[in-house]
Amino acid sequence: MKTGVAHLPLHGGKAPRWLFEKMVELSGAILELMVIDKGPEEVLKYLSNPFWFQAFGCVLGFDWHSSGLTTTTCGAVKEALKKRGPSLGLFIAGGKGKTSLKTPEEITRICEATGLNHGPVLIKTSRLVAKVDSAGIQDGYQLYHHTFFFTQSGKWAVIQQGMHEQHRYARRYHWLSDTVASFVSEPHEAILGEHREKTILNLVAEKSRPSRDEIVTLSHSAPDKLIREIKKIDTLSLPRHHPIYAESFRPAHLEKTLLKTYDVPPENFEKLLLTRGVGPKTLRALALLSEVIFGDAPSFSEPAVYSFAHGGKDGHPYPVDLETYQTSIDALNRYIQQARLGRSDKIKSLKALASFMKRNPVPSGEFQSLPSSSKS
Image (cartoon, rainbow, N blue to C red; front, side):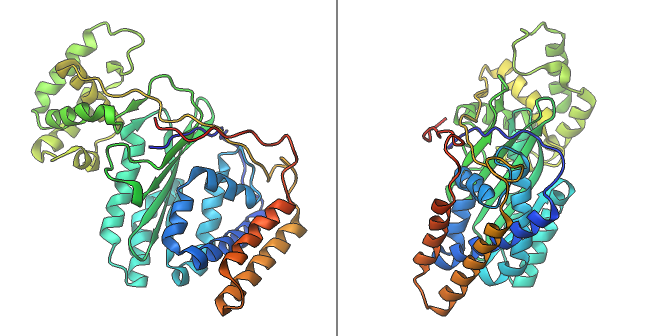
């Protein structure tokens, strides 16, 4: 798993209508050129790359250090792909807040309209990815954004974001189907967020493999036995620094959930995650029991370690220049038409975007250097 950190403070308000409309036009043109040149599956790889996605949002004129870059960029792309998606073979579902809950029905609707038969698998994947980032990794960030990209071949990428209300920062999670060997063992393409929490319960780390197996075993046990153990632990004086706190559990609610796993025992940790009602507190309780009973502690390593910079909407590093913005959109649309008609080399069309960026650099001193990628 490649990991990283981006300082993404939670900002109020939203993108001005005039800017969002331009973002829709420009993002659509950029993605169409990329599909023409590389194909939709390759575009998924770019979307799942946190550095590229951050730069993409900056090119669209959004504020580099705002959590809104994620939600607004994905929203603009969704609008753009409503028109361009079917012809490009690139689709998008989900979004921010309540819209994220509509992901399954949006995937179904798209598959029915286009004749794709990947719907059930993609819906299961969407649910599982959300469960991993909300319950498998417990880092203090509550998911509020889930965007699911997919192609006609069934390949997919996911961009999710969670917020930490106390610290007022956001964390972004990136997924790519090509790099997921297991949903429950080091599955992410990248995780980006500010490093603040000292104790992160990371049940999808490789180090947590014994704990995952033991948690599944415990989920097969009689609920009354497990609840008795939890209550015993609750009466102990655990060290203040212990990462899992028993007092946060509600035994009555926990027992209801454990009855489900006892009646229909999950085969593995992935199936356990997909069991309705199994959330962060259930997994914390089982992880604690696993540590106490079997002696295997799960991983508490922080899955995020890097830093970014770039700029746009709020006048940093410079205000959005509407004339230049429109010129860029018009130029990209011309390149798309030329590429469709075979009148120019597709690669030259994409290089034109790079040339534009060179002609309009961010003023010196605005960039921070990026650390090289490293394994967690």
